[in-house]
Length: 229
Image (tube, rainbow, N blue to C red; front, side):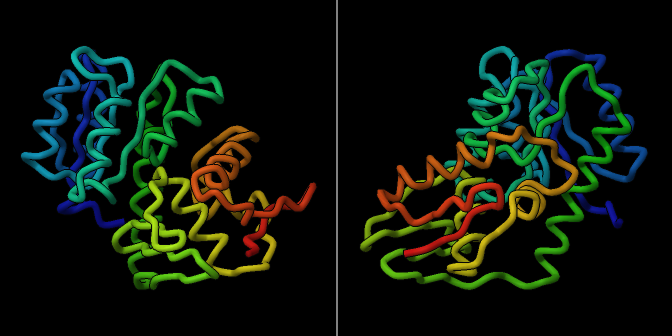
């Protein structure tokens, strides 16, 4: 994979972790920038406009979760890849992270090789989507999904979804009535290199239903889910 020109920002308050991650990513050919707290991470992100941001969750000034939430409200960072570094490995923490807009989770203590593998996997996934061309606007019944503007409308009323909620809804709505297997959803929305808990899809489906105010996603027990209106 061509890493030339790819910019990565790492934010962590532990100098040793910053140094080892920076070394390994630079050895792979990435251009790397660093920040030691949440405020500096926001400032550096605006300065360098990175392709991917690695955020420690427990940072001073602003946590990684707060930084991610702020960035996702800004159009310039809507599609920026974000990985969380965390010592928390429970499922509820992962779900909250994905709700905030994270693309992946890496647990501490960090394995540089594993982190590098996850970074490369995310860039490959984005590359495949770009090669396939941009998806068009979906209109199913009274629901309109615009992947370019990242907007969902129900009866002309805009609905705000988290990044993974949007991607999950778009996948299901792209083939109304078709049953998507759980593993298929995990691979296409989270990627087969990302490990998430069994309840992650269920939580996201429930939140999509609540936010849309529609019972538009049917659970097919023991199989998967389908979009129906």
